[in-house]
Image (cartoon, rainbow, N blue to C red; front, top):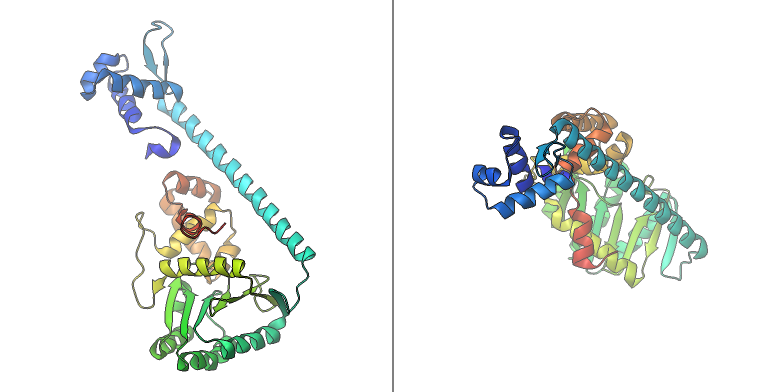
Length: 342
């Protein structure tokens, strides 16, 4: 519990022992805890370094206890300050990455004959997808973000999905968990499953994406408006990275119809996603979009998590979630360590 603010378990045990015996020396504490003297000294050194004990002004060879409401509050404030600095560093890094992407797009004009092709408008995007379906021979994988699918999307997709499955193409789709609350989308994906498609759900998705035959990818240029424009990517480097991302999300996604497991803190996968998004500083509107739910639902989940954390603000919720180990950093670590994606 106290490890998150930099206090080891031995130091906590000695600190608590000093509550009962404030004037106890090293040997007295050793007898109380049944520890060797060296172990007690090491714990006291740590407490002194953290300003939880200090030298007595009367007896300079003795240590006296610093009241926990002062000492521990100071440690917590320092941790909050460190977290705020880290969030500011991440915001700066995000801005730099956005600028780098902008410079890349500016300096590399997209041409259809090159590894990158740009599509404008929903008609061009859907026509290109139809071409992919006709050309596809082995695999057709998608991330279908945005929550419940529109009737237009379902009507446009069904004949293409049937065509792929009739040819024996491996069809994989990952939808958001929230689609399970939409009867129309559930009927559609259940029908696909009966035809042989593999369907899974996840609390959030990186972006809408199509990968076919492990050689070509289609992603929106604006995640907030996937119908405005899209990029077709064929370069082996970027496609390999997107394949690795897809495999990683697929392995962590929930098979259709299976009960989603809860994490070690009792969080559902959707709640864990909201905790992570809150820690990143996302607004309720952004959280709602990423989950594919209404803003009202996102606010309800956020309020419930804040209540369980005992937080009075969004910032405090992020601090407490970090201190309690609720933040899940495994997704980024898993991709970079296992696949070498940076």
